[in-house]
Image (cartoon, rainbow, N blue to C red; front, side, top):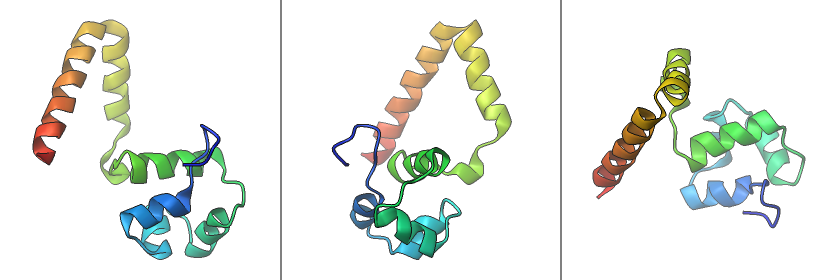
Length: 100
């Protein structure tokens, strides 16, 4: 990660994942040449930076997410925050046990 808290270093993340530029950038629909420019220091638009974070840092398969998933989460947060917290905790524990 860069010194700035809100900046991410795409080249560092890509190398840690062991991916070439084509593999890394194509997962978020950025061309290899565009990704190369970002890795060389060109400013990355916020949507690209957020996609990079979601896909390569948080390891979220964005191709499986649907609008209704977000709607359910937002509904639970607003109308049943205790249930939301319970489900979130259970999901985190399940993810940890899957990795073990």
